[in-house]
Amino acid sequence: MKLYIVPTPIGNLEDITLRAINVLKSVDVVLAEDTRTSGNLLKHLGISKPMHSYHIHNEHQTVSRVVERILKGESMALVSDAGTPAVSDPGFLLVRECIKQGIAVECLPGPTAFVPALVNSGLPSDRFTFEGFLPHKKGRQTRLQSLANEERTMIFYESPHRLVKALQQFSDCFGAERQACVSRELSKIYEENIRGSLQEVIAFYSDKTVKGEIVITVAGKPYEKKGRDDDE
Image (cartoon, rainbow, N blue to C red; front, side, top):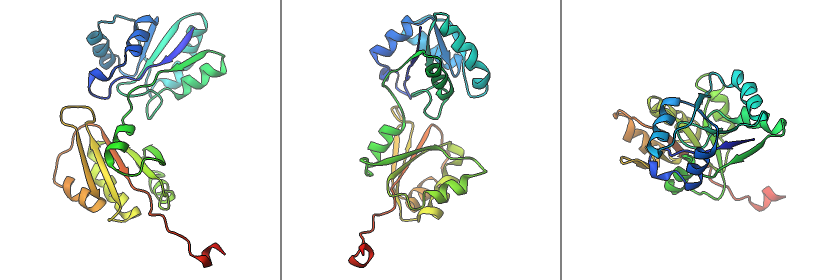
């Protein structure tokens, strides 16, 4: 009995690993964020397995039933629509409960959007903070204000229709000259990485209709060297 966390391609289907394919072939059940999306992937891989829906809207109600089935001897693979489950996707609650119940959890390495976005940005990648999706309304400004003095590179996920608004909020909070990169449709045919100051990136997208998955990478606050008086 075991729970496997299986990353799936964020766009290019060739990014699936041999190990991920073998795990999907071996488990009893595949837990899918969207059974239609995962069904297409399994079909592409020539794999036929029972699938059960496991997504943000039923996660709390589903965890106990899934854990109970694993405890009875079933092995399951958790997949999201794209990328690594539990990273801005459902999965954390299930992993935590499995660990609590003594169930082995094995997370495979594999695709995730923020790593290639960070590297593609050209911004410092030795230290960074992954913020994922910011709150849509309540708490959004508070979160941004808490990052105003962040010196590490910051990584955000955002929906296409909120892109320009989010960039403007970043500009208001961090300054229009702060360097940034918008990565769109990573690993796909029309992959796009637009780099520049927040002001420049806003200008680029201000009159465009944007589609696809979005990752925004923003430089941290420039490090200010302390003078002798500050040290004292």
